[in-house]
Amino acid sequence: MDTHTKIRKIKEFIIERLIFLSGIMSIIIVALIFAFLLKEGLTLFWQVPLSDFIFARNWYPISDPPQFGILPLILGSVLVTAGAAVISVPIGIGSALFIAEIAPPKTKEIMKAGVELLAAIPSVVIGFIGMITLAPIIKSVFGLPTGLTALSGAITLAFMAMPTIVSIAEDAITAVPRQYREAAIAMGATKWQTTWRIVAYAARPGMLAAVMLGIGRVIGETMAVMMVTGNAALIPHSILQPVRTLTATVAAEMGETVQGGEHYAALFAIGIVLFIITFLINGAADLYLHKTKK
Amino acid sequence: MSSEQSIIETHSLNLYYGKFHALKDINLAIQAQRITALIGPSGCGKSTLVRVFNRMNDLIESVRVTGEVLVEGRNIFAPETDLITLRKEVGMVFQRPNPFPLSIRDNLTFGLEIHSDYSKQNHTEIIEQSLKDVLLWNDMKDRLSQTALNLSLEQQQRLCIARVLAMKPQIILMDEPCSALDPIATLRIEELMQELKKNYTIVIVTHNMQQAARASDYTAFLYLGELIEFGETKHIFSAPEQKKTEEYITGRFG
Ligand SMILES: Nc1ncnc2c1ncn2[C@@H]1O[C@H](COP(=O)(O)OP(=O)(O)OP(=O)(O)O)[C@@H](O)[C@H]1O
Ligand SMILES: [Mg+2]
Image (cartoon, rainbow over all chains, first blue to last red; front, top):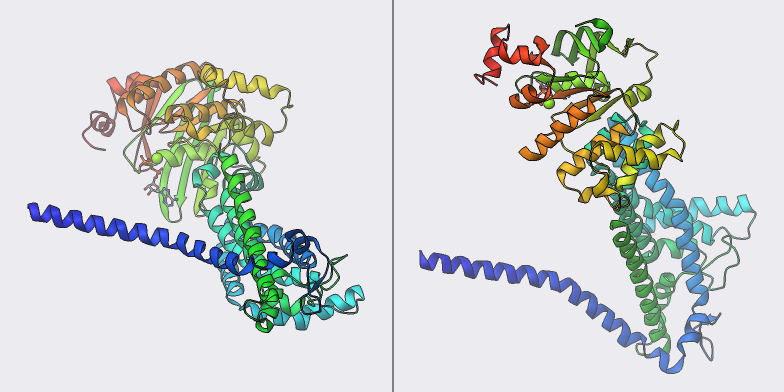
């Protein structure tokens, strides 16, 4: 009996530690990645002042002397991401509401399968399709010299964000307790009033998480963006010009750099910037959720 | 029972869930400004019957209804029935308190806003009056913008009643409104019902025989989808005419 309890206690102890360890592991790994980024990236700022890095308008990493201004890259990323968000958030949330609340069972199954399929397409394939079909259309519709523009990137990325947004938002909407709907309908609310004012409102935190994850995917996306945005590191004046994003820059140039060199450090510094942007977006979402909870 | 006072009447009401015959030839006249209790063993069709009166059964696809149900003299299954008006006239309180995940104030104004015949200026008055009616005003008046989900279950249920009162209905349907509450809260809700019946007609489903005996004026006993007996509560509980009724209220089955 006594040894029994002892063994049980030891078991408990080990299991608890293991769970703790796996929990702490994810934090440690993130911390290590960030430390590595800092170590490799911060050396850039011995030579280039931070303000020049962020605000200078020219990214000529291999000219002599090199110029490491990432402002055009930041603007490229912002433009493409914001464009993708403007397209994918309303459509994604709308589809999620439709699938969860309105669609008849058959349609619902078909749409869900479609969304899953869309999520399963590799980004390089989406990029390829965008390059072959979308770019020519944009070129001829707007009469541009090239169809590889920020707009093409935004539309392509919207297709990548949408499955994430739709499926997570749909889960959140479906998880809203039936009693809320019943109460609203019993008060004489129409289907639309119930869906919009009660169900969507109750599902807000989940829908926000869906949007964040969708946008997270857009910011981090590299392959498709490289294929359709034209990759010109210029400050864009409209969404119909070629741009280059932060991620595409790192992916395209990392192979040509000398480890430990200035260019190499600059690409890592871009990594730090990306990390901080993602962190800020997540932080803002958290803050918003905590505020509305009260 | 003089029929000019009856506010709900059913004539040969039958309801089917697909092939399942859930309500069988129900003829019932519910009196205005009285409390009518529906009792009967689990699965006999009490919830189904109250949900006929505001047509909540419409949400279930397989449901089919025959016969007539008159609410304030109008057949609610007639094609010209406006469900939105019907549900404003016939409010419903559920078994589990289900306030919306909104502030206390927004819970009360939701009904006003969807039935937009109320001007915004009246909202404050209506909020105050409906909270007073359910005896929540003193506790709630300083925290109207807090979420309703932090209230106690009893307060939540009172708020759900207030939310219905705010729409100024004629009839309030209650499907086991006290089954999630403790005995003391239950008694207080019963007191509230006595207050409310001065202005409203109440139909309450209950599993609790004492509650039916204590709180209602009329009692309907349902068994396997049939209305076995209907009459004044004191009659039903002292001298039931049907053997089944007697067996049920003395606790021999159910
Ligand atoms: N959506 C439905 N589809 C099919 N059958 C149903 C449905 N809802 C209820 N029923 C059946 O109709 C009968 C009456 O159900 P109802 O919920 O009205 O009973 P009740 O008297 O309210 O029971 P309880 O006291 O358990 O709440 C039951 O046999 C039940 O199984
Ligand atoms: Mg029931």
